[in-house]
Amino acid sequence: LVEPLSAPLSPEEQIQHPYTLGTTRIDPKHDRSFGKREELSLIMLVYNPKLTGDQMPDVSIEYNFHAKTESGEEFFNKTNPQQFNAQSLPPGFSVTLGHQIVAGQSVPLTLFPAGEYRLEILVTDNEAGTSVIRNVNFTVRET
Image (tube, rainbow, N blue to C red; front, side, top):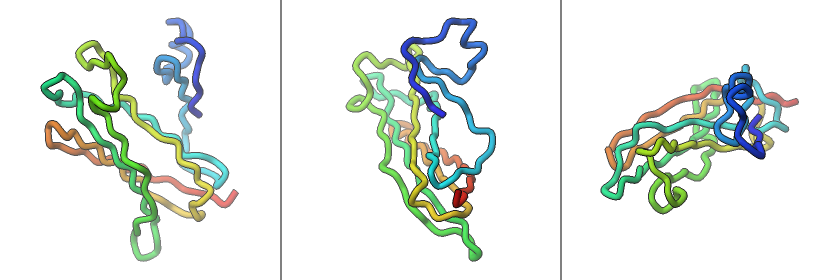
């Protein structure tokens, strides 16, 4: 569950809700099984990007879904890549001031057939010329 808040939490409230970032409260799901009427919501922080000459990051993130089949895996679907750079980040964004790249998406699972999946998340630091891949396995149930 990802829920917007009207104001940041107090220090005492933050202790009770450690997954709150600014005005976004995150209630993590503790299993990786979802019904077709649910959404797969992802939040992640991208840290230590190499900065461009104008002191901005240049990061792209791709989300590729693979269905697990009896014969292995096959590509199922993908979402549009996310870009975090001087053109897409808000004015005043500054890694040196402690601002963070908060990436993520919510993907409705209504079009996913029931089964096992692997989400491949490819994070590319375009300025550094480096990439990292993270995988998330999950299940879509009929109900």
